[in-house]
Length: 415
Image 1 (cartoon, rainbow, N blue to C red):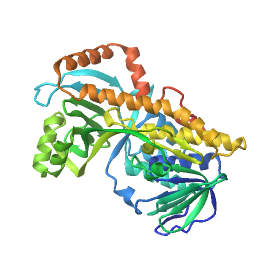
Image 2 (cartoon, rainbow, N blue to C red):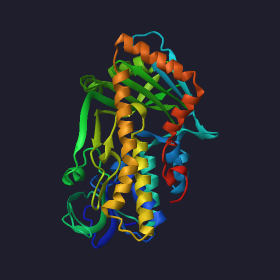
Image 3 (tube, rainbow, N blue to C red):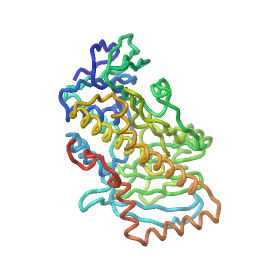
Image 4 (spheres, one colour):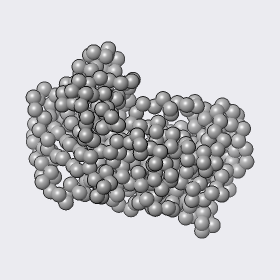
C-alpha cells in the first residue's frame, strides 16, 4: 500500500475511489480488494496523517460485524484488546432517585459462546483495517480531500485538494454526516436536531465491571456505561445541549461529581481518563443513497441517535452490502458504476436505515422526558419484555446485527 500524506500525485483510472478512511471506507476497500484482487482502489482522507491514532473513543461492535472482521483478517489483531459485553442492564429513573430499579436485563450471547457485542477502541479498529489494507496493496492518501467531481458516462473525474485529479468508475462518499460530496451530488437529506448533545469520555474505576453494560434512562437522555478492557468503562452521556456544553467546560472536580451522581458507586471510586468532548445529536437521513457512478455509505447516508448504539453497525452493514453488490456485478461483467447496479445496494439498505432512524427517534422521545404517565407506560413495557424470553431473544439478535437480509460478510462468509 502506498500510504502517503500531503501531495497524492495519484493518476490514472481507478475502479473505486473512496472518500473517507474511517471504518466504513476502509471496510469497503478491504472487502472489495480481498474478493477481487484485480480491482484498483484508492482511499483519500482529508484528516492529517496519524489523527486516527489519537482517537480515544470506543465503539460497540456487534457480533455480525465481528464475523465480518474475522472474515476480512482483522479480528485476530483486535480481539486481544476487545471487551466482550456479557450482560446488558436497563434502568429508568431520575438522578435524584435513591434506588434505580432494573426493568430489563439481557444476557450477552447472540449464539452459544458468541457475545452479542464487543467494546473496541476506535484506534484499534482503524489500525487493524489499515494493516489489512496495506497487506492487500490498497492505496491510501492522507491529508487530501476529494474537492469536486464531474460525472461522465463512463467514469467520474475527481479533483483533489492537492491540485491533482484522477478518474474512477465509481466514487463512494464515506466522508461523514456532514458529507460535502453528498451535497455536491445534489442529494437532499431529512434532518432535525434533538436539542441534546452526547458527552463521551473514558472512566477508570476501582472494581471490575465483569463485562456488564448499563443504560440508564434519565429525563435529559440516556446515560450509557460500556465496559472496556480492564477496570475502565466508556461513557456516552446525553444531556440537553446547553448543559452538556457547560459540563465539558467545568473543572475536573465538578465534572466528576456530576458524573458520579449518574454513574453511582457500585464500582468504587471513579476517575476520568483523557479528554472529554460533546457533540450535538440529531437525525440525518439521505433521501437517496446513489446517483450514477456515485454512492453514499455510513454516516454520509444516515446519522442516528446513539440511544441504541447501532450507528457503527449500520455503517458496517452498508459496507458489507455495497461490497457484495459490486463484487457480484463485477463477476458478471456488469459496470459497477451503473445506476441499475447501485440501486440494488440502495434498495437493500434504505428500509433498514429508515427503520433504525425512526426507531431511535421514537425511543429518544419516549425515554428523554419526565412525564409521569409516559414513565409508567414505558416501565410497564420494559417489565413485560423482561418476562418474555422470545421477545428478549429477538432484541438480542437485533443488537447482534443478525436479523433481516444479512450480507454474506456479516454472516462470516466470503463474498
